[in-house]
Length: 94
Image 1 (cartoon, rainbow, N blue to C red):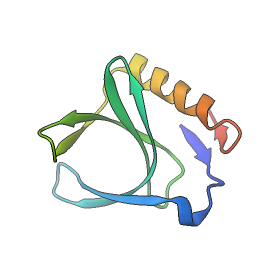
Image 2 (cartoon, rainbow, N blue to C red):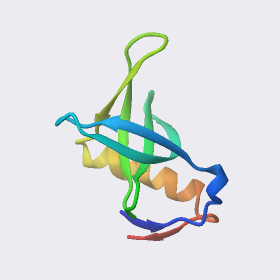
Image 3 (tube, rainbow, N blue to C red):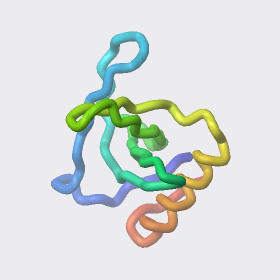
Image 4 (cartoon, rainbow, N blue to C red):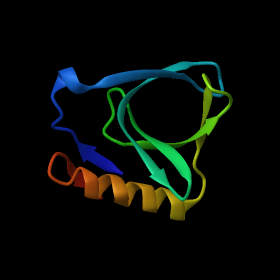
């Protein structure tokens, strides 16, 4: 899922997440999308032009986990919602 962003720099948020190997990875936050009673983060690893979609798993009122989405149908649906929402702002290269 390649794309080019035309978002103004001052509107970007950076999230630092720790991967399964204990390495910190910076992501640009693009959106949060609700789909089938769950929420999904749409992120872009810094320096890359591909997006990552992660499921938000609430732990308690202050904490949450971010899970890799394995289901291709869910990935396609969330990506489709994201593309429709940002079709006038972003250029997508499928």
